[in-house]
Each structure stands twice: as C-alpha cells, then as structure tokens.
Amino acid sequence: MNLIGMLLFMAVIGAVIGGVTNHLAIKMLFRPLKPIYLWGKRLPFTPGLIPKRREDLAIQLGRTVVDHLLTAEGIRSKFKEPAFIKDMEAWAKSEVSVVLNSQKTLSEWLEGFGVSEAEEKLKEKLNAFIEARYEDLLGQARSKTLGETLPEELLLKIDSKIPDFSAYILNKGISYFESSEGRVRLSMMIQDFLENLGSLGNMVQMFISNDTIVNSVQPELIKFLSHEGTQNMLTQLLDQEWDKVKGWEVGTLEEKVGREQLLSFLKTQINEQIPYRNWLQSSIEELSKSYHELILETLIPKAVSMVSDFIDNRIEEMMQRLHLSEIVRKQVEAFPVERLEVIILSISSREFKMITYLGALLGGLIGIVQGLIVYFVG
Image (tube, rainbow, N blue to C red; front, top):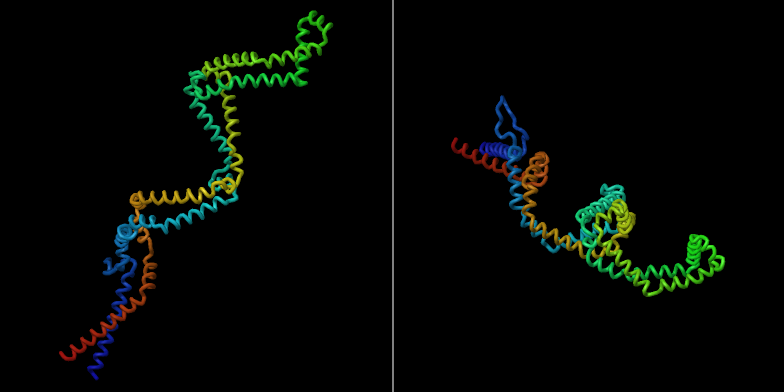
C-alpha cells in the first residue's frame, strides 16, 4: 500500500505540474501584453511571445502575403478566368442598366456630382470656346484675303451658286411686282418720279393717268426682269462684286462687320444648333434609349476586356505602388492581441485542452516513474 500510495501521490503531483505548466505555456503565448518590471528589472518571458514578436510577425506576414499568397501571377490568372470575366460583365451591365434606366434628368444627374447650374456653365464654356477658336482662326488670317482664307471647295461652290442667286433675286422681283403690293409700290415710285420732274411731270399727269402709266410700265418691268440678258447682267455684276469681296483682307471684313457682331452671330447660331438645353432637361433613359444595346452588349464587354488587359500588363507596378506588405504589416500591428487570442482560442480550444491534458498525462507518468525510482533506490 505504501508503494501504491506513493505512486498515486507522485502521479497526481506530476499530473498537476504537467497540466499547469502546459496551460501556463499556452497562456504565455498571449500574456502578459506588456513587460513586467520588478525592482527595475524586466521579468523573463514578459511580454508574452506574440505581443513581444508582433512587429516581426507583422513584417513576416506582409512578406508572406505578397510573396506567396496574394501574388501578381495569382491576380493575373484570376482576371483571365472566363467565369470571372463573365461575372464582371454581368455586374457591370447590372450597374450601368440602373444608370441608363434612370428617370433623373441629365441636369439632376450632374448635380449629384456637384455640378450645379449646368446650363449656364455649359453656355459659358461654349461661348468661351467659340471666342478662343475665333481668335485662333482669325489671329493668323487677318492679314490674308478672304479668297486665301476660305477653303477652295467653298469658293468654287459660291462661284457656282451665283447664277442661281441672281435667278432667285429676279424671280423674287417678278413675284413682287406682279402682286398687288408690288403694283402699289410701283405706282408710288412713278408718282414720286413725276413729282420730281416739276412742271413737266404735272403736264404728263394732265394727259396720262397714273394707272395708265403703271399698266404700261409693269409688263415692261416684268419683261425686263424675265429677260435672259438681265439675268446674265446681274450674274456678271454679282461675279464682279464677289471678286472684290474675295480680295478684301479678313481684318478689313472684320472691321466692316464688327468683331462683337461677328462673335454674337456665331454664338447665337451655334447655341441654337446645339440643343444642350433639351439634353439637360431630358431623362437619362430618354437620352440613352437608342444606345442601350450598344452600351450593354458591345461597349461593356470591351471595357471589361480592356480593364483585364490593363491589369494584366500593370499588375506588378500596381502592387508595388499599393505596398501590400506595408498594409498587412500595419494592420497586423494595429490588430488587438486580445482579439487575436479570442480568435485562436475559439478555433483551437479543443486542441489546447488536449495539450493541457497531455501535459498532465505525461506529468503523471513521470511522477510514477520517479516514484518507482525513489522506491527501489531508497
């Protein structure tokens, strides 16, 4: 009984020592968090292993992530996977469809990006662009003639249109003088002419009425305007005047018309031709309706492919600029050790208990062996 009692006693003592030692060793992985000083000297094994080596652990984790886990080749292969590309296209189409089907006006949409009073700003930008282009175009052309400045195709087109223009003028003249308004105007002109003749005009009016004169002059005037020679003469006159205009310097023409008048005319015409006011007041859906299929079925797949190729060609540079190892290091250093302890213990609590039990078992066995040695030696 003495042997058995001693062995049991030694086994219990060994088991307690082994279990407590292993349990304490597990705790010392995380505790204490800070070094403990006694009489000015730091106690051994303080702080715990992980708090003490957290900086080294952070550096090594950062290197491990960049060198072995989140590698450029791994990211590149992911972006080349057909399934991933398909998912990216589906996601992009979903997000873009929300925008394309939006009932917000373009003006409201721009306000969401901080662009208020878009119409006024767009008008200011457009007018500023017109002024800048006006100065760019006329700055070097002011000393040149109009014929040297205008495109040859435009000059030839104007030359070819002069006969049509003269015919248009004459036809308008004929239509006018054939109308009642034209007849009244012709009568007034004849009346003014006769009055300017003085007594001779009065004498003519005594013998011939104004209506008679109009009835005689109107057909002849229309006949004159309809004559081919009249059109040729007018065409020749217009050609001569056009040749003179082509010889004007651009600066001279600008002075005759006025710079501000030219700019005002250009701004008015261009602002009227570009319907940006209607665009701003229209919904995104209305503006993009004609392009939905093009955007969703053509542009988005191309954009995803371009992004994939861009990442494929730039991934190493992007990762270098991101400094991933530095990010991991900072995150690990900032991560609370207490939280890390909770996570590890929650995952491995069963294993840690088994280690504690194993320590107790080994301690108990060692105690029994020691008891036997003491018994037989003693």
